Amino acid sequence: MVGTGRTRRGVCLGLAGLAGLAASGLRAEDIVDLEWRDLLPEGQSSLPPQLQGLVPHDETDMASSQAVSTGVRTDWNGRTVRLSGFIIPLDQKGTGVTAFMLVPYVGACIHVPPPPANQLILVTTEDPYESGGLFDPVTVTGMFGTASMSTQLAEVGYALSADRIVAYRG
Image (cartoon, rainbow, N blue to C red; front, side, top):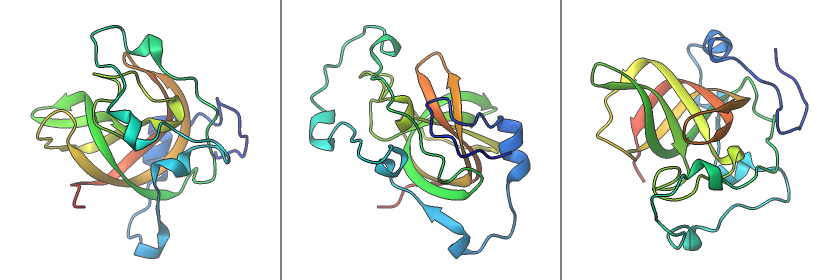
């Protein structure tokens, strides 16, 4: 079930629901290529890349200093999207990662305060991804939706059920 509300809570798609919506045999034109700025409500901006490295790196509780989200976008709910970012592993099966946060820049949520919820994506996959470690750059393709959930690291605004995860190639 996909809604069109634009509130912070948006439509909460369960991860099982996202997995159930995953389409097979998609053509390239069926995939929406997203950039992180596409996840922000119109007229909103995020921390500029040139300032991201200037955020203090300390050992305080990062989740408590998470920037307030300005809302999420529902434009791509139920669509297959492709987006690149960095992995923060949350759950594993054997040596592979089965759940992780996809973040827009290195250090997000761990060494620097988390970005707002509308810049964080909870990714799940049935096929564990053999990650090389914390902050692996990857490109993820799969079913996308808004979500309102909390992890031990931060509030998350989006969820993605991954059909494909590959190492990022710039």
